[in-house]
Length: 316
Ligand code: BDR
Ligand code: CA
Image: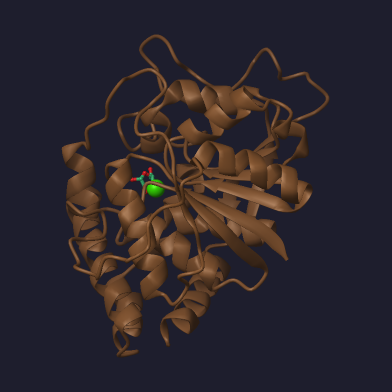
């Protein structure tokens, strides 16, 4: 089995990403590293601990990452994030706090140690800002050649952004960190809005979870309904909520769910398009492409995997 690290700003779809990973026997979730974004770092870490407990997996260790971007000295949650994910990040649903604490080792050191231990068997899946992985690559540059791969949720190549016409939220929080990762030469698959806005969930599916009559089923249904409702306001044309972060886990588990374009990318860090993910024209002719951008997704197959895995997990 491959080893998986999830790096999360634990909001609603991040919580669904945890569920997908725990429902996937092909991978072992060896740790969750915390970042900021949908919520403050502390709240995200609290959510990750509480959710892994609720889903019956208190063995999953949670590590604290960096609390803000590499170019700022503090972070505040945007109103729009609180609107989409709820003030507590998990649709304002109350679940018991864990009595566990985050690990004392930092997220950055844990990532580096995990690469040293598992090498090519390690898949790292960031679904928030890329701050922690950029810091790890700066501290131990050799890990770019040692890691199995990085499957990130973020960016957009063939569609508009969701912050504005060109910026996706995770990249927007720390464009410099994402650019550092993209240019590092680490093997990375970008699962961006190109594909994640095609994989949508509706009340019909969340009702399946509620019908299980379990604590986990009720939690997942109530939390996700909040998120669907927010999408009805912000993106009524979609007809559901975007399964951004779980799709990245889906691709980590089974890369054949998407079609990818091999392309070395960068992030604009200056000028009016700051935060845009785009092909790096200085590296277009490089024979080696270290990055792939997901441009198509098998929607029915992913949704089926998503529902089957999470429903089985939430049964108990
Ligand atoms: C991404 O931004 C966050 O709000 C979501 O959790 C997801 O990771 C979508 O742009
Ligand atoms: Ca996220």
